[in-house]
Amino acid sequence: MLFSSLLLVFLAGEVSASYRDLGIPASSATVEVRVFNVQNATLIDEAHAFIKPVLPGHENAPFPDYAFLVDHQDSKKRTRRILFDLGFRKDVLNYAPAIVPFFTSGGVQIESLDKDIIDLLHDGGIPLDSIDAVVWSHTHFDHIACFHCSIEGDMSKFPNTTRLVIGSETDTSTYPSFPNASLQESDFAGREVGLLMFATANLTFSGLKAIDYFGDGSFYLLDTPGHLAGHLSALTRVTPTSFVSLGADTFHYVGQMRPRPALQRNFPCPGHLVEEAKEYISTDYFWSPESRDGAFGLHSRSQQLLGVSDTPDAFYADPVTAAVSVDKLASFDADPDIFVVISHDISLRTAIPYFPASLNDWKAKQLKTKTVWSFLDKTNPAFVFSPM
Image 1 (tube, rainbow, N blue to C red):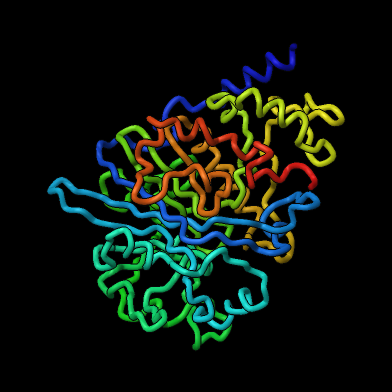
Image 2: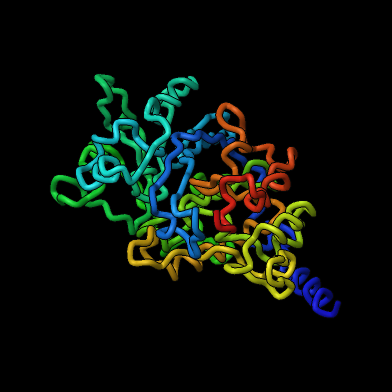
């Protein structure tokens, strides 16, 4: 009883009452955010490169691959359109030669290669020349698609008027000048490239340096290092007081960020999932002060269930820095005004509304409340907490 009382005090002390407590300025300017699930893929025997621990039977890493369309309207009703990440390209054998073996070796299995973001935009009536800028959160192949593509004779491509925005620390080496590069000269040819200089940014949210892209508080780009040099994420204001955080690859499983005390305080886990966790989360791998052998105590767990992989082949260039970025983004996750969506969140794959639907009404529809604990549902593909 004493422990439970102290825990409640601890939880209450961490609660963020408002997005303003995170250092985010007030504004009435907003953007519209819509999401595409470009592909669904599985990395074979690669879960260990993302998370720890990996329990028997969960060695593969299945992921959706999201791209986000962000529409901004200024005071004169002029629309500027941003794509945040692009997903896979469908002609995977036309990636730079260093990337192609991922696919020819069978290490990556893609559910369908019929369409990529260019096709999805076309199907949705979004002209490529209406895209003012593409933001690459980082340059891994599952985020960059292609700008100058020749796909089965179709020369569809983003026009040179589409600006490319990247973090200033991004490695922009290209093939063939650099044989092992993952980028190609055509990615940059004739295109304006904007480098985000976070070192001189004058805004900081929850310890993350931020740049106000439109200058009106509607769309911020955030420095979230650790996964890859130049990695960034975004914070979009979808109503004057609510936000969608586009977490990119700051982490890959929501279990790397949850549960945390402040999250449990603001979003109590549904009782049936608490009971399921007691039965199905393995106490051979996970523990908490109120756990006992064979019965996991979720309420007393004060740290996330999964860690950032630090194996030699990890998909995190700097695992220690990556873990700090996860900690900082966890403050967003605990805030009732912010809905965090990472690029490969498989826990949301069947729950998130896809284009042409909008994410702007996530709070009114209680989307976060309904999904934030779904990764603990044993039927959800994000559940990796019991040996199979």
